[in-house]
Length: 278
Ligand SMILES: Nc1ncnc2c1ncn2[C@@H]1O[C@H](COP(=O)(O)OP(=O)(O)OP(=O)(O)O)[C@@H](O)[C@H]1O
Image (tube, rainbow, N blue to C red; front, side, top):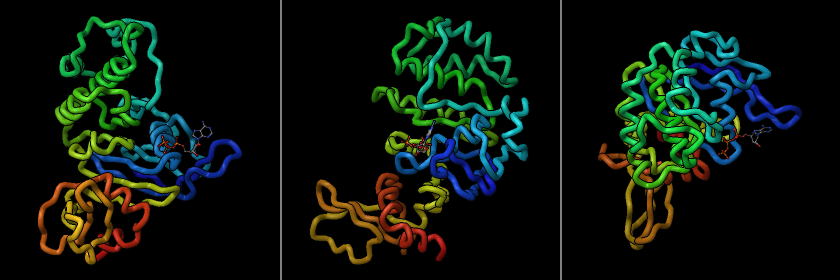
């Protein structure tokens, strides 16, 4: 679905954000894009949507170079940026003006999403709180019903109940043909939604694995203070002892602890990566 080849990008005369960076993403997946502050996650989403142009390399969406900004690509992807301004219009006016750009736009998805978020269709975008604006914008994005949805920090600014609503809303809007790329630091808001995790650091891809493979290879556990950690790939002190990542020698199931995995990759990337090549 997405193929990034030899991407080099920098803002003006500043240092490169990406240097000869390559990556592929499959269709039908909810992909978590993680990385430290300033590593280039938002930049990558803008490049993928063709809003920024690389100095070298190509980004293909369904085989078409996104730099061409062809209607067929633009009508089939939607970006929800971290920060945005909405026009001073009613939602209905906004929909009348913008829905026609998206051939599969669904009023039904819009209605259901608004309902899940506790909003009604008669809202005026200029009269909403920041969190409500985000919800309304995300509902429009889902209703656009595109094959690719790019979301930058979607749960920022949402209250606690809305974060679980967000998971519900997104899960119900998924299908085999759709892909969602979520860039976030709020890993606990999305970890149960993800099919695939990509962790980037500069132009390096620290991890590019399905959640199934991650939990197949790694065992995430909470241990007491006195439990031995000799075998652990990564140990992080927690309230009652240690959170650990162990090699999953016995094929046991454990819930993915994305925050722990992310921290492990920043300090012990070689040890973790080695497990996936064995
Ligand atoms: N408009 C811009 N002009 C110049 N430099 C920029 C601009 N936007 C981002 N950058 C720089 O590009 C790099 C990548 O920024 P980007 O916002 O893509 O990172 P990020 O991974 O999304 O960070 P965060 O997790 O903090 O949101 C940073 O060094 C940032 O300073």
